[in-house]
Image 1 (tube, rainbow, N blue to C red):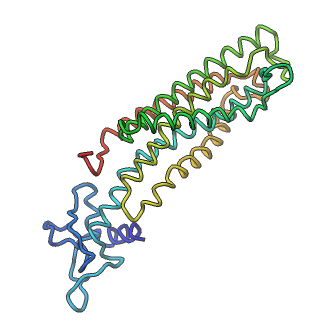
Image 2 (cartoon, one colour):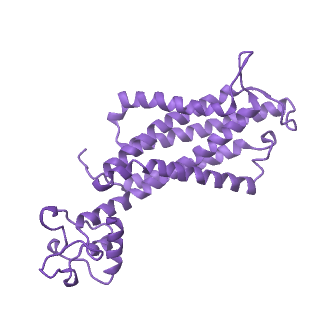
Amino acid sequence: MSIARVLVASVWKMKISAASRDSDYFCGDGALADNTVPTKAFRFLNRAATKTEEDKQFDGSYDKTWKLCTVKEVEDLKTLIKIMPLWSTGIFLSTPIGIFSSLTILQALTMDRHLGPHLTIPAGSFLVFILLATTISIFIIDRFILHKLRPLQGIGIGHVINIVALVGSALIERRRLEVVRAHNLTNQPCTVVPMSALWLVAPLSVVGIGEAFHFPGQVALYYEEFPKPLKSTSTAMVSLLIGTGYYLSTAMTDLVDRTTGWLPNDINQGRLDNVFWMLAVIGVVNFVYYLICAKFFKYQNQNV
């Protein structure tokens, strides 16, 4: 509600000039008052905390309304606005991961999934390797590495690791297609390619390691930087970006299917390696975008 009130008050007072003195801003009343000083960033929002004659009550005091907010509420909204670009980089990180997970299952369906003469690994079970790698990596990172990293550093490392995983997947798929052509299996979609599906474990594990860096890093960042009234909401931001990213992954897969010949029904006739290269390029562009956002982002506590 406080966010909505700040937006409404800012629009309502659009024609009013921001106050020139700190005393002209509303900081709360009585025990709820604080000494928060309005910052220069997004100055148009400062109007929401500017006191005017219309905001004055009958007894000469001021109170929070849809036309007047406290400076703290305005600064809380500014904090959310500053962190949103960093949050958006997580969406474009989750989208390639969603596509990668789906395509890896398609690869496994065509490859030799036997472990010994009697055991066959279900194709969908290969995604368990991501969870195992994430679990083990989080334990190691939390015990030996996490205290040495700031959240932005951990997230950045996760970006790089995921790019490496996508490049590895592209190379493995190129090798799989070479085996398909060498054994003349291009037009035999039901024939198992004589290449072990365990090759897929490596990129899956690397993705899991990347998730162990960037997802906990994002949770820590949002919890540290979100305003106090929204601390509980901050922990849900990662789930929101993952869900958004996976919805976008479906749309992107459909777009690739419609505009290229890389994803036919028989992937032995397709070019999944090109899809992985495309995702790697998206990862690189997103990482550059992340670096730009991180460069201009300032922690609330610069001394930490």
